Length: 262
Image (tube, rainbow, N blue to C red; front, top):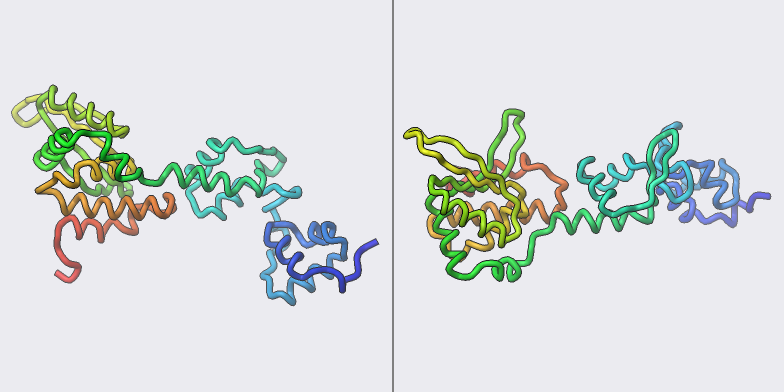
């Protein structure tokens, strides 16, 4: 027999409904009629979902991957990586894959830790003072720190060092390895037909690491370093919830050293 409507908590009904349960499921949980749940939600001013739009939960305590991803505000690929790395329990149904609501906090921690910047003291301990000064000189002279807009109008941050001396290139790679940075190497030819190596760092966490390591030794590209660190800090603080398009124009202005009004 259902519970008296007078004994049903409006706050409890609202909380259960907001987790994704349908009115019918909420009524079964608290032991009252569906009409009581509906009336309590209206009284509380809770916005009701349209009929058939209750796919957030199909069984108690589980939420669909797509619903969870929308709640997180992250891209699908980033969220799925977090789910896989968290090794959370998953259940399959005819409507898709579902995970425990209780695991959402754990997934968020994994994603946040992946995109946070490394501690400054930790970075500075990776290279000796002479090594950091040498790498800063190379970046000052033959490096490029900036933003690139691709053919599909997608922005990407980049730190690229070009050099025709293989020994120097190997030393650069060694420094980046000590800093724990991922990098790519491309070989091309100069106009004088000399072989040239292009060492590129692309992940914003790795670019920030290099910038932190050389900042105190940089002379010519200090403005670009500071602007890039600002951008990387914003991306890390938001846990990769944003693309570069939002901040790219103002960061490019700062790298060029001109004001918005000029």
